Image (cartoon, rainbow, N blue to C red; front, side, top):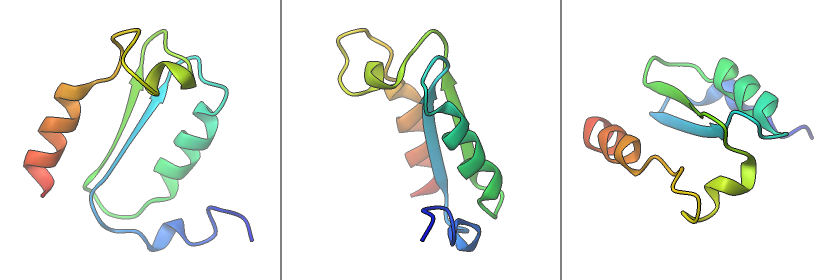
Length: 74
C-alpha cells in the first residue's frame, strides 16, 4: 500500500520540515498538499539536505519554528 494512501484523512496540526536540497523534498511537498485542514505548515530549510536535519551539527534545525508551532497547536 502506498504510504500516502490515507494522508488526506489527517486533519490534525501538522508540521513538515524539509531541506531545500533534500532528495526527498518532493515527497514532503506531496504529503503537505494532500493533508486536509488549515493547521498545517511546510518549512523548507534553505541550503539543507535531508541529513542536515538529523542532528544540529550544521545549525540548520529550526528549533524556534518547532517551539512556535507546538505553542500554537498543543
